[in-house]
Image 1: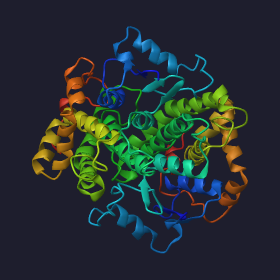
Image 2 (image 1 turned 120 degrees about the vertical axis):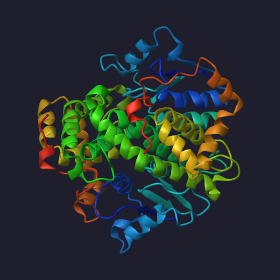
Image 3 (image 1 turned 45 degrees about the vertical axis):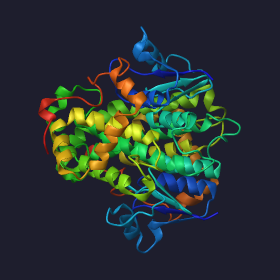
Image 4 (image 1 turned 90 degrees about the horizontal axis):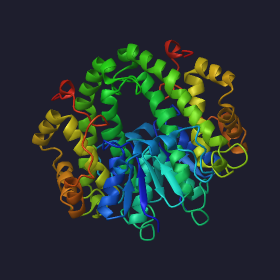
Length: 251
Length: 251
């Protein structure tokens, strides 16, 4: 089978990082526009309305994009679902037909509450404008996020991890590592970078111990550990998870 | 097989409407908490951390929720994917293994740009606070949405409809009606209600003629037509798509 090719903005982890973590955990062969000379050109070509589409796949709205042979797909949770099925990181539909939907809902919830909402904390008014032009609103949004939304979502995932459906061990569903654990890891990792004071306080509270233990358990997976120490791992910069001192509030 | 049961806030279309449209188009047997006496109680019970989960399905974060026999799942695009597969409203994986991912990406993009972003237009700062406490920011967000984001997403779907991958006829993918068409219909319908002046102007521009033709084509499907005329269809109120005169700007 063809190797996987990730098409994403070079120079930041962003939404592409979820795709990388799945490929790395599975030890899959892949290439990444983060490491090619004209990576950015390749991204732009795929979202340019002037460039004709291939006639097989629908035109692409935004990266991350995955190419796999003839298949060209986008939307982070969609790529995660595709790769999870391909690489055995979701329950086998032959054993348990509903398993992929139970895992997919956890992926979608993590991305909603712990990736999209943090992004909006520095861009609450207009995605196309600078943070500097919406600083005051960003502070208000961050205050609400840290006080209400972040505890809500951490509490939800703690509840999932304490439920019988999570099985034994540190994982979210069925006692096995799935793509949902990898997605939640990256979300937590980004939030620890962005809202470091608030997370420190929430860690001390002790109400989310299983959530933070999952972050640690993913970090210790041999393939993930190697990856995080490699130069394939992108450093946080001006992506979803950003560090602004004035938004780093305790809540 | 067991009938489907939709668990969602009574009294508004909201995200539950996407689920209803798929069930209605397929002529599936279903029940809906919008029409039961203690519907709201049933919703609250499922998202209450104090109520023990069933041990088979992960706890639920938020409605809409679908019950189907032992399966209990949430997250709108996840329910849509499940129902699409069950009811034959996605390409058959036996004929075309990548088809469901091509359709799922269109569903996710429609919900991102034409449902979640419009919601944020009246709640840009805090989801848990009143619109009245974030009116000024809502106007700024709506101005950006109508000027930049709405044309971007309409343009994207027009591009999809003009691509070879959409096949012949009015549908988004493969010449067949799929769940993506139903989702896009509801998004357009809500936006026509919320931003009526802006949509009127964009319709006149003529740049999105295939998008607006899709809205009309879905409306004319016999099962959908019956449904829209029935009292099962929820009226717009204080949900995702709201009418505020001061936000009804031309752009």
